Image (cartoon, helix red, strand yellow):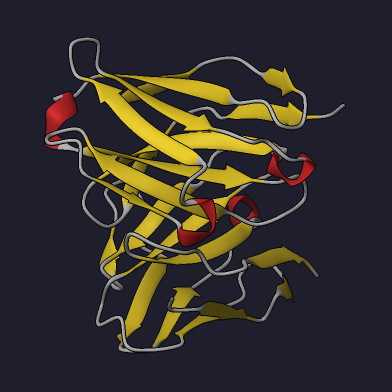
Length: 104
Length: 117
């Protein structure tokens, strides 16, 4: 099985900050990667699919990049609604362990 | 609008089975699959597998092979996930979600399954 890792595990940031989360796969997964946002007590929400495609309705401050084994999720200017946990997922398979973005 | 409505919370004893339902509406059921994801208290997301609503093909997470069965009823646009031989570490919120051959775009509200003697 391909293993997914994320860094950092926790990130403290302020409103307006540029935030970058990294996801790594133990072997190449091409661009078959999605990013999700989850808030406490809620179901996850799809943000990015196929590594860099923005899901309909998701604000443009979210972007994804990468291919092969290394991927990034970037929030260009952190908003109060963005404090949450973010997960990457290899298509049809396992999630990364998550990155919690909290208030600095 | 797309909706996935799951059955209610369950409390089960160790060794028992649980079957969670997920009724879909707002889209053509057989044009997508259903994926199941669970989340233990305070933990991350765990992918359990998926089922194609078109042809019934399934793909299960290796650690659950032999204990999990995913099925669909196309006449009622409902998906089911059965987990057998329950253990305490199966206690989790179980989510169904619309699977579009890779990622997951709509999620159910979640069903809490508690395994306790």
